[in-house]
Image 1 (tube, one colour):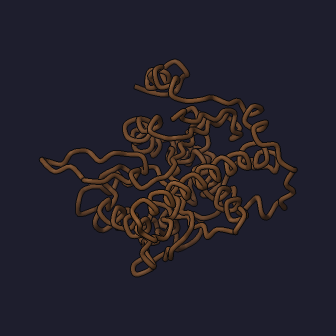
Image 2 (cartoon, one colour):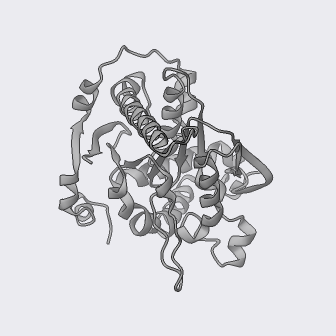
Length: 326
């Protein structure tokens, strides 16, 4: 089954799920929380945007400022709930960090969304401490993937060290002084040995990755007692038509070929000298064999587990927001 057309895509989106969400057009969403125009510099926008896209001050004002306001409402509610429970239990416990999960396909713009949210959340009253962690750091190292026969399935559920990711999230949510997340290098396409991102009692944590809403499959008679999404206070799925995501992936691959891939240390330096036609064939092959399969089989089916769905149009702009009713 493919997702190239709107009709085929709808086959994977049961209509009963529509009734569990409130749907807002771009204009309706922006009207929920009118805000003063932002005037971020091009360099500030570029830091958030990443390799491709057309992020603008208008997009941030119309989509992301209302989203941060909605998140702040949920953060306040979670804090109030914690205070009430602590009072009932007669315990004086520090409020646990509010954890936001951000999911979606490769090349759909998860990282951009996460960086924008982190930047705007840092400016909330009280200037909370906000950490951003990607689940790339919890991929098995390349040598382990090769041993397991998973070298061509990086990003699939079985390529992640789920046990370590769950342990990390447990430490963070439990309020431990510091938790360490491994660091992944996109340049070397591998985990960097003995290097970690330390998360030390943050107020808010954003966990971004293609796998964050997935429920692990049963392995023999053993079922994991906790899933990654169990730790989330709210979850977001960044969505777009598959044909658009593929075009963005192709565009990004072409940009990286002329930039990052030219670095002698790049894992993908072998692609730097490809002709234009070879570049397109190579990127299309990688998408078809790996990313398309992973999207249709493992990522898209988690869409309706999200509390909030951001739907993007062909030009990267957000055109619709869905919010779960309960």
